[in-house]
Structures are given as C-alpha cells and as structure tokens.
Image (cartoon, rainbow, N blue to C red; front, side, top):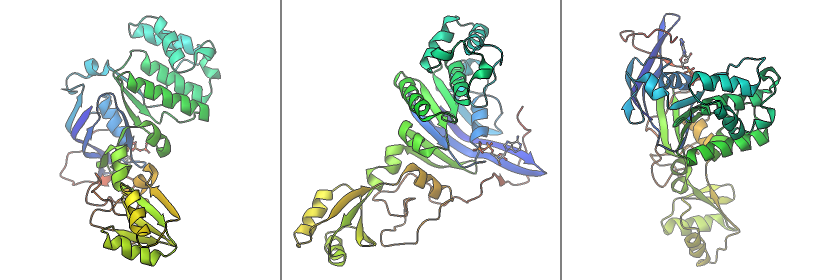
Length: 348
Ligand SMILES: Nc1ncnc2c1ncn2[C@@H]1O[C@H](COP(=O)(O)OP(=O)(O)OP(=O)(O)O)[C@@H](O)[C@H]1O
C-alpha cells in the first residue's frame, strides 16, 4: 500500500482545513504497520480514502501495486477493515450474523465458523450479538473483516475494549496473519502495544508524515545510549571523551552516545583504574519518541550530547533518525490552508 502526496481538505465553519496534507505512506507487503498520530492528525480521513469512503482532493493511492482510482470495488475485494463500530443484527447470533455476511459476499457458510475459530469466538458463536461484551464485538468485527481472506487488513484501534488475555490473543492473531502474508495497517493510541506488534510505523501530525520506518531503526541501536556508573564520573568523562566518545553527565552517571561497544567503554575506563558499577543500554520507547515528535513533550534542554540531529528522547543519535528536520507544531487539529485552495465536500 502506498500513497503519494495524498491531500484532503474540509470546510469547517467557513475555514478550509487540510485534514491530510501531502501524505506519503509506504506499507510493505506482509508487514504489520502502525499508523500513528495525535487526535485530529488525519488518520481516519486517510483510512477512509484508502477504503474509497472519501475521495482525495489530490495525490494518489496505490493498492497491490495499482492505482486505486478507477478500480475501487476490485481493489477493495482484497481489503478487510474494522474502522468504525461494527454493526450487526442484535437478535441474531454472532455465527448467524457472519453467515449472512458470507452469503452476501458469495462465500460459503462454513467461512463463518472458520473465522469465529480464528478470533477465539467459537465458544460464544451461538449467543445473540446483543449479549456480546465490547471486546467480543471487537472480535466479531475482525471475524467479519477476515471472511473474504483479505490481502490487506486495516484495523482502527484493534485492542480497544479487550482484556489482557484478549490483547495477547489479538497480538498473536495479527502476527499470525502477517506471517501468512497478510499486510496489516493498524492505527492505535496504545503505543506499547504498537511497539510489540508492529514491524514498522508511520507517525503523522497535522496531516503530514513526521517519521516513518522500521521500529528497530527508529528506536534501535543507532539511537541507543549507554548508561555508565563509575565512582569518579568527572575523571571517567575525561577518559571517555579523550577516547572519542560523546559523553554527558546524568546525575552521578554518564550517558555515552551509542550502545555498540560496551566492552570497549569498560576497557577504556579500567585502563585508568576506573571500574564501572553499572553499564546498561538506554533506548527510547515508541511512546517517548511519539510524544516528542508530535510536540506533546518538550525536547530537553540542549546538553553535550545534542547535535544538529537530535533524537526525540533528547539525546543525540549516532546517526540521524528518519525524522523530518523541522519540528512539528503542537496543534492537535488540522491547519487552516490557503483560501485559494479548493475545498472538498464532506465525505459521505
Ligand atoms: N467531515 C469533516 N468535516 C470537517 N472537518 C473534518 C471532517 N472529518 C475530519 N475533519 C477534520 O480533519 C482533521 C483530521 O481528522 P481525523 O478524524 O482524520 O483525525 P484522526 O487522526 O483520525 O483523529 P482521532 O485520533 O481523534 O480519531 C481534524 O481537524 C478534523 O476536525
């Protein structure tokens, strides 16, 4: 799935608001890709365009290597989605609801039982939908999306309302689907979950891409630091700086840029009779990365580790992270745009 320069403008109280503003996304086949952004950053609008529910003002969407424009029904026959509260007939069982959906999609009735098993709802398949808990409704929505064995699955907040066991099941299910070749695009505000299940992420703010890439590259070794505890931090700073390391003080500890060579740090210090009492990797988590990137957590004051390319944890990476040079605004909503630009109608 790819988008190029995707743009959607709404008119809101006489103002034009670019909900999505030149968005470039790329999701690799078979990956689980997190689609993240603060409230009002344009995720739903983007997903609606991906599903043919809203028309872009400009830009292109490509699904399965082909442009979506002009072939929406054909392309969407390979896409499953749980993006809004799933609607089912309350007085029918979950199983019956799915059987009806299968029939209307020209699929065999037996698919209903297969997907119920897949999402862990086989035991409650014969209960009426109205008796389902919120988490069970979420699972049934996913089961419905899986009926046609989609190649691309789009999930909006799939962990919502699930208990801890349900979250673990959902995580395993998503990983299993990806392992079988299904591409999963997942929007969620639960960043610890995203970090566990997604191999790559795109983070947007004000309708624009702020960062994109493999989670391990964004948060990985190249952006890690080494915390070093030593009895004489001042002396240790001089030794490590002379050895070519970028070093900052953090209380009584030292923060050394990178975590590639902990053994060498230990050796360099020991050569000067400085013996480490602690040596550990410091890696930012996705939540910290997200909050700084989207302007909802300030960058720390400049310190000795800060270079021109600063990692969102406030420390300097050895290599430049895949983030834009300019800092995003902290506006949680779309930006007003030039009055000369055409306004789009609200999507149906
Ligand atoms: N139909 C509409 N008419 C006018 N403005 C809209 C419409 N739909 C969305 N917007 C505006 O577009 C911007 C992006 O909204 P969108 O719902 O896509 O964000 P989101 O990232 O999905 O937010 P959330 O995380 O809260 O669901 C917001 O400023 C929103 O107010």
